[in-house]
Amino acid sequence: MIIGSSIQLLSSEHPYGHWGDYPKARARVLRLIADVRPKLTVILSGDRHLGEISRSDDPGLPYPLYEVTSSGLTHHVDFIYHFRSFFSPETNRYRVGTLFYEKNFGLVDIDWSAGSPIVSFQIRDLENHTQRQASVSAPANVVSGDR
Image 1 (cartoon, one colour):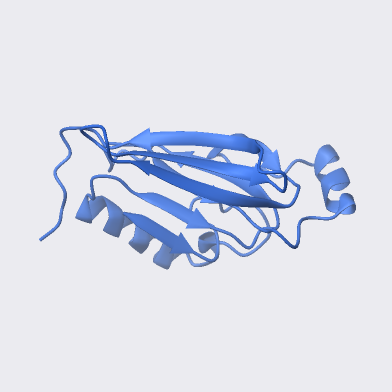
Image 2 (tube, rainbow, N blue to C red):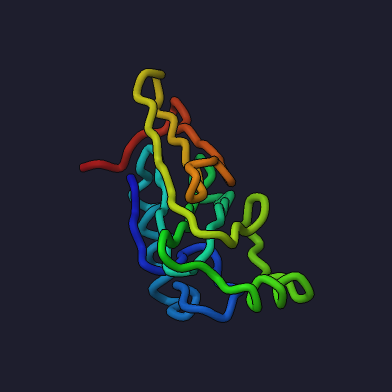
């Protein structure tokens, strides 16, 4: 299952818009994912003017829950923000690697050729170079909650 969100679902430690501003709704979405138990879930989000990959090892899921945030091709954080974050880094307990501050776009690739789909995601720069990446596959023993 791929979930698209205009704001970040996992990360809630930064001062910008995120699902943590709506704690009951955030908990409900995460509980719904755990209750439905899809074979695999990836969250795609944006509106941060930077790129990052987050990973939560939620005990309610048999696989890590990844969120890929990419934005945008026309706007990115300015030099002042990047400079300020050097002295006071923006925290995200779920972040994999580091923030990518340049103009970017996200790419999701699903490999169906294996017994279990493998989802790879990347944050790429304007020259189409991969700047951040991760992948996840559904465990073979996961039973989907589809009804």
